[in-house]
Length: 378
Length: 235
Ligand SMILES: Nc1ncnc2c1ncn2[C@@H]1O[C@H](COP(=O)(O)OP(=O)(O)O)[C@@H](O)[C@H]1O
Ligand SMILES: [Mg+2]
Image (tube, rainbow over all chains, first blue to last red; front, side, top):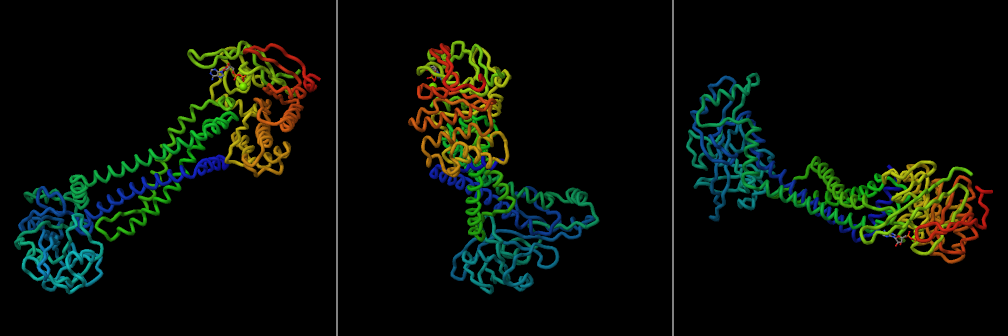
């Protein structure tokens, strides 16, 4: 690489300060927009499957037609016994979910989402505890909630009381960062308490979490489960994750909106960079013609323009990355967490470069048409 | 006499399109040999710049042939023509065409950089010293006088050791004294028997520097005379 060519590129770039600033603002704006959309998408993706991610189940037994984790249809306990009868099924434990009303001593109510599971052995228990222990949930009326919902639920510490379905509730444990995509607060409890809070009969459950024996063939176990149980679906954790994701992110249009936003950001960015690069190239046209006249190859000239594009990309990207990290840090504990991962940052860097180089096309086409004889015109 | 550096034979050039189409050259034969400084003179619009453009491989003739260092370049594509310019030709323009964002030294280095040559700094400084600007290598064009800028342009033209230097009205924007200095420089360059210099002008003050003077009118060469300066090639 020639350093002089690079110097020419950055001098061209910085020569017109105002245009340079406009270019950088355009790139930063565009890339921050893309980052926020992509970050929201990653955040939602994680949030939507957080319960499935934290379940130990190899297979999920669910009522036929279940669309996502929050779908509240019911299974009968007899299905559980049939499942347990199958060779290779080590565990099949009930999981109870459902909406309920959380009533404060003051009388105000707010909807919550109950997640009830076995508290010992195989089950989906609260994680990331910052107050209390899982064992504390065994005492009567004990539940766990997330710290971030304290205000919504009118709670300020463990030991606080409320009511669900006219039954006492005591916050015995507190988690951090377990938030729901629907924004309805999760309330963890033992499976029996959960049935009481949601009104689900003792012989019913929302899911059965299945553990398959290590030496059994999971595919075969699943086939047998499907054959011997009726009106249910048996999904692997990965399949259930996909189904939940598809429902929330694509079924609801939330994902499409995020992609549209990101695409818009890219288009705006490309147009702005293309516009300023083109204008800059036009301003320096006689210099490019001079380069051509003194015998530079086409590639040499294009590289000057591509360097200008890449330099803009690097500077713009750094600004955008800094802002994105700030946004990520600020929203980390909010309902709309923008998640910025290193892989995403890298991908965005490549994207910014690609966007800027694509923007150089118009300028390069302009330069390709240059007639070196114009340097003699005056 | 050695083989000409540039040789134009029967060159015809049409410029423009449609109603604006003009025949700028009507069959020109002109060759430039190493060691001579040829002046191309003629009234405005007579085709001087067009002829210089063709001899400098900035454009190709509509008819006729052009040879540069023995190679027929008549049918080359723009990229190959750029290669010929890079290897054989240095230009000096009336309006200098320096890069305003680069120093004098970098402007000169650029001519080597497009050739893909390394260790350019030393060569650039040497040539700048040769044109009398050894003390201004770090100045930007805006900090230099017109005469100084034209010297930088000459340094840029000769740094790659081309076989021909083509200059279009190089003194057109300069006062008498600076113009004389520039012509002295060009005449010095033409002392090298391997290098020819072609200067387009309508400035009679330049006459004493020429080894040969060619007159063009209405796209035709009408007269040729030997100049006051002795041509090395013909001596
Ligand atoms: N791009 C062009 N299109 C049409 N006509 C042109 C163009 N460039 C020059 N001409 C015409 O060609 C003739 C020769 O021009 P030029 O070589 O520039 O003359 P000189 O340099 O001697 O003044 C002039 O009549 C000029 O008007
Ligand atoms: Mg002219």
